[in-house]
Image (cartoon, rainbow, N blue to C red):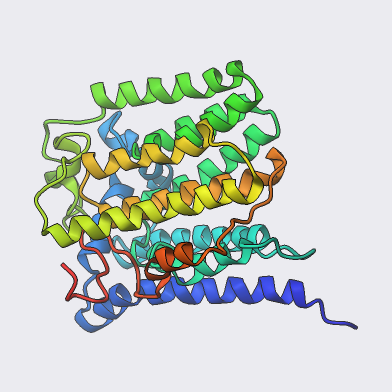
Length: 357
């Protein structure tokens, strides 16, 4: 039997992607193994899995906790087993994203100029799979799946389904309003104004509800398990935390990490001879997160995901998924962004190289 090397390339990509995920997760896993205690990054994310509508009423970021609550209630171990569920769910999500990326950017029938670059970026760029592992169990990962499904629903003309999915995503984590919802609505607008309104109105209604009723003046730390209450203050503070003072180098690196995906999107338009449109501007909305929150590495990761969504939808828009990356200035501009320096990080950029501040 002849070997289908294109298929094997896809399988190899998935294996390498999960290895990259493991590299990103390794500091947390090693720290846990050495200290016997889950690291703060995982405790922070675990807090979100304990905030449920059943126990606390309507609060922002409560949907995942509400879905997981019955599972946690049945577990005999209130600590290790819960972390196993949380990390196992994240592993499944990231595997699904890797499988999708392998089929989108390593097609069996041949490669489009620049298309394989995006597969390489998912594997080795700091905003790719390594970041998924480093920021393990973040609610953003759940929303990546929901928004990807919403994009697929829009492309199939099912605006009502996309509306449900983006509304659910808002209840998972409100940051999706900036990096996911604009892309879905811009794609829907290409089909009809009614489709775009059908999606936008429920998402905006959910955003208003979160602003009005999503917080609490109560201290959730007292009600949450001591081993899972590190992020309890999230629900009593402002919806999004304003940017704070960092070293100038930090801002320069954050700006570069955010602008490169937009450059790649622009080169995608150039490859296809397409005029810049509202869909091109949709990922730009993610830049608002850099003003409203301090997790600059995380926002860069979400911005790259928004660009990948548009590339994934390209064939349905009579475009190719590739990008014109041939000019030398473009290669020079994106080379540092592509370097495998480890994950991009969260509020601290490039945590694998601590000499960058």
